[in-house]
Amino acid sequence: MVELTYDRDARMLYAYFAEIEEGEDATQVECDGCFLLDAEQLVGLQWETAGVLLPEALRYAVGHDGVTYDQTTGMLRLLFRPGGSATEVPFPFPAIFDLDRNGRALGVEVVAEPEFELGRRLEHAEAFIVEVFGDDDDEADAEAAAAGPGTAQSVDDREAEAGPQARSAQVQADGEPAAEVENEQPPAAPSTVMSAEVVRAGFVALLGRPNVGKSTLLNAYLGQKVSIVSPKPQTTRLPVRGILNRDDAQVVFVDTPGLHTPRSGLGEFMVQAARRAIPDSDVLCFVVDASEAPGALDERIAESIKAARKPTILVLNKVDVARQADVFLQQYRELGPWDQEVAVSAKTTDGLPTLLDEIVQRLPEGPRLFPTDEVTDLTEREQVAELVREKVLLNTSEEVPHGVAVEIEEWAERGERLYIRATVNVERDSHKGILIGEGGKMLKKIGAAARYEIERLLGRQVFLDVWIKVRKDWRRDPSSLRWLGYDVKKLK
Ligand code: GDP
Ligand code: MG
Image (spheres, rainbow, N blue to C red):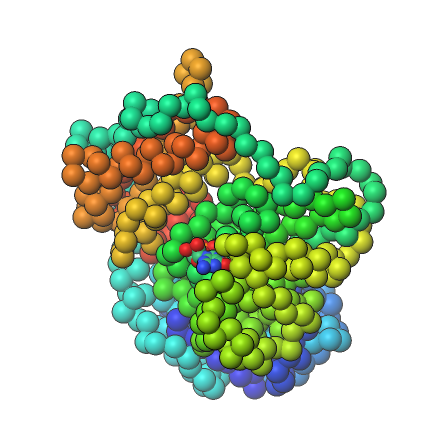
């Protein structure tokens, strides 16, 4: 019989086709499929493996009771209860099969969205479940389900909602004179023209728990702010690519959201986004904070990095403030083995040239992957929205930051200037009050700081109009999440 484990926090079922020894799972492949329901209860799981897995890859899977496989259609099915009809509910994220070195599927992971309330549908699956992890999250699931997609405010009542006292920050009037803004373009290394010339080129994932300095590291390499940074964990939400060109190499850094245990739809999106970066990368950098001992989260991240069996470098960051670095180094080393370890400070840039050399040595040879004048794959609008969000994070504390999402609603030429209207979505009325501040002071401050950086980025004068809007509990609301661009299906 196939064995299942159920992780309540991650709302994940894992089906084991074979016993997995640590480190035995060599690669992962994604595969679409669906939950099979009868009277709301899960009666099975189904995967469309055609074009993804060959029949011999499923050798361990097909030996089990309850598993059927149709070679002609590639449909793999696991039934907890034989016979009967079932409704198909597509998986919200592709299932992930773990394969061993011979390409055989050892097991598969399936994740549900909160409103699906997976925990309540496991009656028939129970006999297959050998282990349950995580907190009892039913309450949170129920809450999320109750919030439902219908609670998102429509775009049309947004203006009304902002109201007169929401006051837009007329930043241009109060900010520093825009004429003084310089157009800085400091690529960190000499660029060359794109050609078929063979260099070392590839993707490098920056992985680690929130707040260890992944985004700071990326920005330090690129000599400009590509990924926003703040002292708050989980500042980075989308995987941001930053491209560094050298005469002999092109390094495409992928700054990922920190890997953490997801507690909301947004958290789920962020963890998925970070995990997806692993199979697409040529080199993995496990970034840790050398001023702190490793925690449980570091251990878990280390496991998933090692499972990918890719060249991995342990990056001990923040050595500028690390007093017991030697003790902690040993502890991080023991989470390995790692192919290399490098101590750096993203803040002072100590150690960065050494780390870059170690990365480049491990990249495959080939042509450059992006034109040499491209520094990031984020659009200007995305970068502007991120800069506004960064200023909100830097100016607020506690509960506000996590619930902030910025949308750019207008981007128009107005004479000499570019007019940009940004809406800052918050989760509660009280957060809106905090962001506006007494007499609109806070909003002005955030707007002025954001405008300054936006003008540096775009190299021109900008009129930035910032509005605050309450979108209740958007992080738990799938339709709001999609609306704001946090959609797993659209991940690059
Ligand atoms: P991320 O969540 O891993 O992307 O972390 P960030 O890059 O957003 O940085 C988190 C915090 O750590 C920020 O306040 C940074 O200024 C700080 N930080 C990052 N690198 C260093 C470093 O090398 N030394 C010190 N002292 N602080 C750092
Ligand atoms: Mg970050």
